Amino acid sequence: MVQAKTELRERARELRRAGETYDAIAARLGVSKSSVSLWVRDLPKPDRRADHARLMAEARWAPHRRARDITRQQTKLAAAQQVGRLTDRELFLIGVGLYWSEGTKSKPARPSERVRFINSDPDMIRVYLAWLRLLGVGRERLGFHVAIHESADAAAAERYWAELVGADAAAFGATTLKRHNPRTVRTNTGPAYRGCLTVSVRDGADLYRRIEGWWYGIVVGAGSTI
Image (cartoon, rainbow, N blue to C red; front, side, top):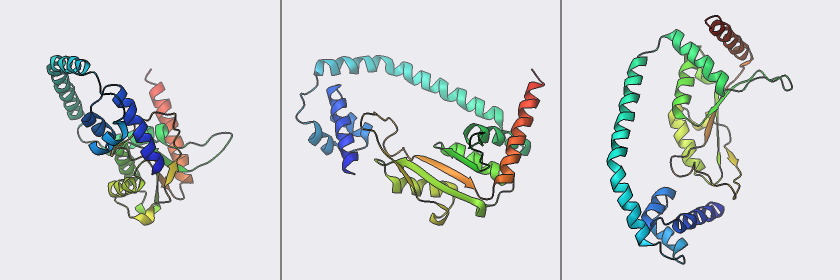
């Protein structure tokens, strides 16, 4: 935790030097304003003229940004409505492609027929689990594993993923804590960062072979339409 606070302090000082206010720094880093004050109080105050110019520019562009955001959201909603309810075959094909993109695959130099899927996007995890249910993979065959940076709140991430997948602690292996490189400026910080979740299927060799075959079938089928 000491290292995490040190990283936050250095980031706060960088933001203050860039002209950010205490409130803005606290919001971006997910810390209290009093902590920000303690960390940066020895730094010179930002040039308020620059702040004023930035606020004026923001005021000019705010209506355009709002209009852009509304248009973007309308486009997304219209696209979502085009999909509608998936058939079992559609979910089946989506799941095969999803696994072949994000799941582990056997390599010639290191053969391994294990079914493991890792992702940080909760919606990807939901779709993948729906696909496994479609294939008849029972919950008793699933194992879960969280990987997260050591500076993050690992316990909160574990609770989040457990609730998302509807599993208790017994289904989760030990969490992997990734060592942080102080020279790296990470953007995946704050309460919204929950690391990655790995979903493993026990006794999955036969399933892996079928996934590989299904993917080959998709490739052949797509090639025949070109």
